[in-house]
Image 1 (cartoon, helix red, strand yellow):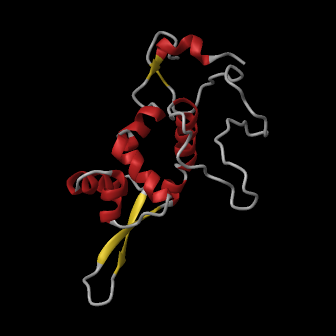
Image 2: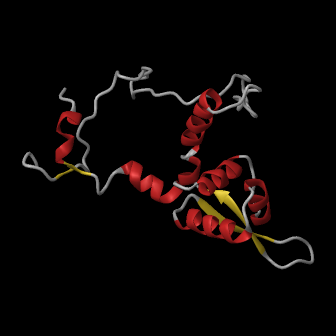
Amino acid sequence: MTDLLTERDTWSMTNCSIARTLEIVGTRTALLILREAFFGTRRFDDFARRVGIGEPAAATRLKELTAAGLLERVPYQEPGQRTRYAYQLTEKGRDFLPVLVALRQWGDTWATDEQGPPVVVRHKECGAPVHAVLRCDNGHDVPYGDSVVDRGPGLIRTGPESA
């Protein structure tokens, strides 16, 4: 197997999956709103308060995350009140959980203070801490340095070897 990294000067990064993801969730407030959605926050005011942002910023981020398909608005109505909207994760949004777990895990290791992490996420069934792990489709854990980059169907080549 040839490591495609040796030819990376011939790649176009116009369709990079990481760059595209950051266009959607690449702000601090977007990530914190998603954190809150995974913690069960549903209402606009609660997102703004728990993330520590003003209503205009919360409205903008919630609108962006909804337009990107990570959240959806669902109507609710309290007795005697007008219909309002809550936010809930979509399937696309729920698929973002491993990314947040990996960010939390890195932060717990490299960005926490001497008191340790503020929360520990545990498996509901057995109580063991939850971690993000790199694993191949055959079930093998893949440590740093034990993978190669191979051509995907969307790779665009721009250099002399683009044939």
